[in-house]
Image (cartoon, rainbow, N blue to C red; front, side, top):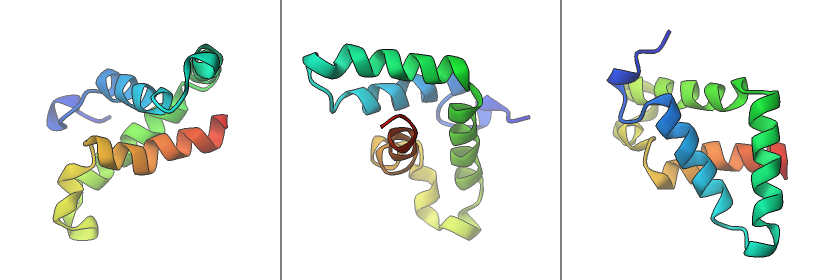
Length: 92
């Protein structure tokens, strides 16, 4: 089990930020629809965002594989490139 104290974000903080970044591209017309879709997906498969968090923690812990930039994996730029992009593929 991951020790959330070892990372810049807890799982809950990660989930909240990934959802915020996911939703920022939607206008008022589709925002509520997408918020509902993401809530449904998280409730149906709560392991998906957990898997994304675990992946980010793995990258953070392995600079020998990912280089010095691995410590940036909890910053918005990385979150948009990987977790948010994967969530977008899942939800649409």
